[in-house]
Image 1 (cartoon, rainbow, N blue to C red):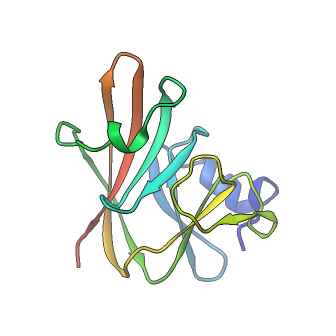
Image 2 (cartoon, helix red, strand yellow):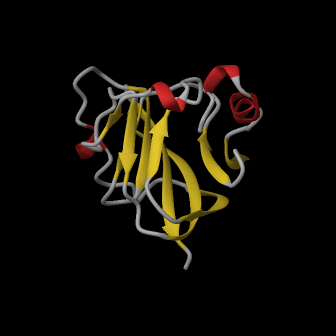
Image 3 (spheres, helix red, strand yellow):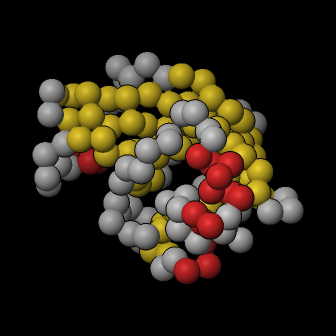
Length: 144
């Protein structure tokens, strides 16, 4: 149902400053992560989206993000999740995408995510483990 760059959904997504949840379609919700395009993946263990801001090629994302204890988290919107989600670039029309079922690559057009149903708070932060590495993070914290 996501129309991509040619639709109202994309315009609404571009108005988000930072991260937020927007309504689209008759009864759908979209979690918008940052206003800049960045390679993004989802790490199921910590329930966290990771956006690659800069790092050396071949950087092991799982190893870099294994310890996020020093991240200063900013509280964000609440999000009800009742079924699978699709991670995609807001400019891409949803109907045209090839959805990767492997969940864990930053090179797929779209990634299918199985997140347990619940009411979540989205929190954002950054990690800079070195002067050559920076990731923007968004974690899902189960509220109820």
